[in-house]
Length: 551
Image 1 (cartoon, rainbow, N blue to C red):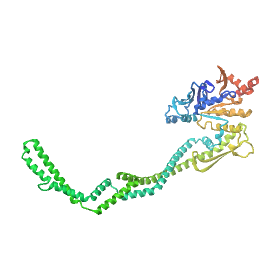
Image 2: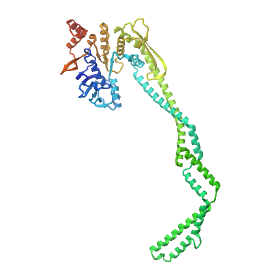
Image 3: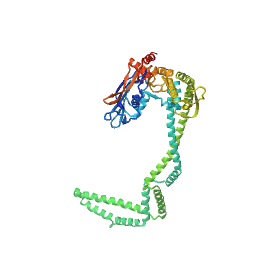
Image 4: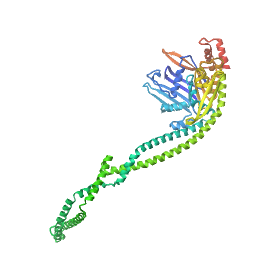
């Protein structure tokens, strides 16, 4: 429930501070006095876009603050999800800066407009004679039935399951598109993979083949040089090894005459042993080498295969080719994994749809059961509002597709005149009838929805006399379940108020300002009398005003 509204520097409001009560609050005032400005301030609190033109004094910031008692509302989860401090007396604040920027706060914590709107939607419903179009929308019509049937929680549970199905369906669509793309490329990639696998590439194979190729192409020259090297190293008496052996024997005579000489002797012997090993390895290499044209042909062919693959895949090393092969193998594995994921998702979606069917059937049963009572209560209210010849039919049918509201399709047929055929409600009501029909719907929903504050903006336009009195009675009944704030020009409606504000213009320092006063009992009588007779209040009008309030 709205308990306080303060406004500063907004449009032609300088400073305003209003305290609100439970029950029916009436706001009256002459056309152009600023009632719409008051609503505009409230809409900003509820997250409407701001405009720098709304500043009264463009050198100062505008501050609009509304306080709500939310102790009876189930809003704790909203505050937790958005990491906000929960307070039974919650304050929403909006600031418009001279720079053109705006800021929003919930309990002094800065928030974006989306969060402000989400909370505002759960605190206030502003309805005017111009926005009854909701009545023509299927979702709203179904919501009326669900609210009356007391199954909004069931619908919310269904919608969570519906969102889960939608999310999984989108994931399935993406996987199928990915699989289709893979399928388009799979034949060529399979060919590339088989080509690489057939090649049987091995790490470091290229370097080894290139070395072997060079040896086979130059075998005669290598053999000649190796043989010459062995001859120079190991020829008896003249070879290096023989010379080192003799030097070693000579050093034996002086090796024990000093550490340094002994070191020389050991190094000579070590060199001789190392050189002997080298001769042995060169000899082994020479014995194994032979001219082998067949093997050279094989090596060249193998190198051609590898070079062609390198060129084909536009890489420079065997390691990169092996990485490509591994990637293609993984893609083939991923192809199978994609099919597995798709199969799992299809099964999950089928199970979800079984659950959705069960829940939508339960929701549909509740709606069908509610329809006769909804029709009866609406017609009763419309009769009180001067539309006693109204007729209606809520026609519910089932469609194949799931929607966010179930599988039901609804058609609200209506006629305001006796004998007229029933037509879709959007084509069968005038502006004034539309407002009264919407008022009857709001009456029906009062207490059924968690909507503590309802604001009606001149919804009673176009009615008078007995009907106006019934409109006031209807609002009074509604105010027993919710906080109802009504802007009206009708004295019959104003007389039902538990609290009455008057909006008027005043002139201060050559500036026209909008002000709002809460009226006392005597001021209420005078205001209602003015609504009856105009600016010149007669004794008769005063008497009528007292009677209206007394009744």
